Image (cartoon, rainbow, N blue to C red):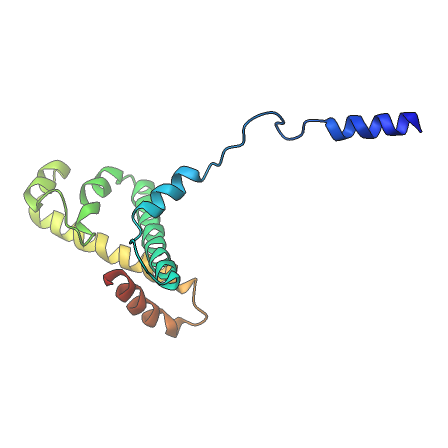
Length: 150
């Protein structure tokens, strides 16, 4: 009985999984950054969820587009043109983008057009993974745009 009790006591005092070390969250900083941009005040939690969903879809589509350009060896072109896709506008104008990418202005405009088309295709594919039928994709895209605008 003494051996059993001693063994149980030793087992109970054992340090497990980094015992004695402070616990920290790997997601703590990411969570703080995510919530600092949330609107303040009385907002419906469903609207917050929908906004996060919309921006997550856009982020995933952008990440896939970036990977596509990187695998094709066009990472530098993507980095120059990616701001032309956003609604905020680009930091560069067409002339500056043309000189940075060593393309003509018309080639830059065509590349931006293709980039926007591929981005839309990736958004469509991301949304298609969240709906039951293909006929619901357009409705979800309209909803995504409405959520982002509000």
